[in-house]
Image (cartoon, rainbow, N blue to C red; front, side):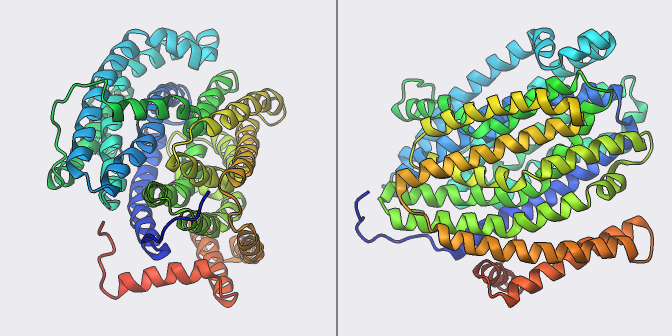
Length: 529
């Protein structure tokens, strides 16, 4: 790549600020999400009913990731950013209206087909239910039909959020998904005991949450002049560009969701409660992934896309290198901590009401196995973003196809030895292969990315994380008080040790994080976009 003419580059500080806004919003959203999951576990247990619900929810969530929050949003931002870089705001708005109209028509058709074809879809997605427990299969079909309308609203919300991200808004778009949790929490606390069929009411509350998610974005959309206008033009060149980017990129950005879909199929053949254990453990692992990996990739994409549009490849590589290092700075200690504390975390969050100790064992095993792959999941989010910022969709497709095959083979091998934990471990293994191969091809594409800086940082992070682990284990075992207090002490004490050591080591990532916190404490709007 030729050396570009000088162009203003987004600073790492600005990227950290945007990632911080996403992280704060994601933290609030995830905390509400875990409150929701704990209430569901308390009200419905971890067996027949929740297996059916989470299998049905997994299906609608798979389509959501494929058509909304994953490839579509990621393909949209570089094209939208091209118009912004050329000062073509009117063209950018018209592109948004046209794509929004096309997506609405497409989603209405998919929702109709999903409702009509639910028996066939569930037979593919959870075939073990049909052979082992016909009543569970039939319940899953009913719940799937009630959950498909959820897809329409969350996908339209995802496209709207992507446009707002490109325009510099991050906090509200990242907080809006919390409306799903709010709707479910309200339902369980105040309504579900009075319903004829509580589990179907839970599915309906999920769709209500999707509607609220979309509506929460309206004020900012209105401010930017992006409220819906009907512009039906499927032949629009920009829509076609997005289509060509989206079709192959479905594999590249949705590999974790496709893996989860394959895992659900396999789990339906294991002991009762395995589907629920997979869902709950994946949700816990996703907390760190969303807080760090997803927040960094969300904040990074507009900057990388703008650098690529301007031909500023040095800025592109610098932003990518910093994103990788900052992601690992937060993810490496989270990985160590969650593996060590898997069982007490599951006990505290779920082992109440109808959720049993046996189900805690299943969930903790899967959580530990999933969490081992947290660095890989997080880096995949960031690295794939670098490909899509350059409008390269083919490379992630090829790599993701390889990794899907590895995951499927791993499921068959490991589930026989480790049960539900084996399914999670197969996903971890596939994700490490995914990120390794992607980095190899990215280096060929853009040249050296500062691997020595990354390696030096990783060594320091690993040492600090091992020291943190020793302190956390000691506090968990010997600190006074109940399990909740000991777990809190282990988390807090470990965090203090890790942060303190990275400060002593004078790590750049620590300095950037502290600079952001000081700015917010000093009066800048912590939650502003």
